[in-house]
Length: 112
Image (cartoon, rainbow, N blue to C red; front, side):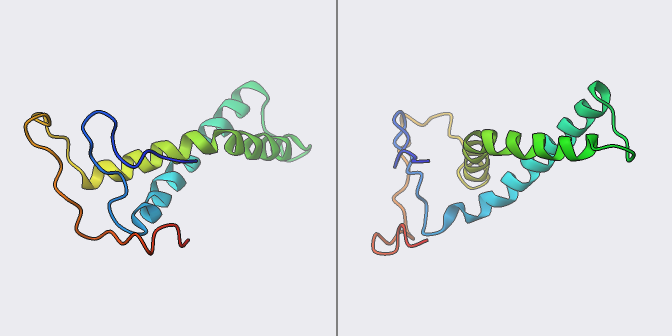
């Protein structure tokens, strides 16, 4: 669950401001829904769905375990996606070092 404080290659800081990654929950939610729909379609094709037996409830249990197992991956992808919205890639990153951060507060970090 820990992340680097900055990119080991270009030195771009990852902790932009206090609470910056709260917005990544939107991306995480969208990824979880997409994975759930994909697993439902796969379950429907392989096992089938019926309201007359418990196959749907077995899928719900399978999907819950799948999402728990994939949670570290989903979190990383969501944080990377959220960061990509706000920090643009600079092709000339060697000549242009990252700008200093304006809205960080070391006293308020890790208060969540």
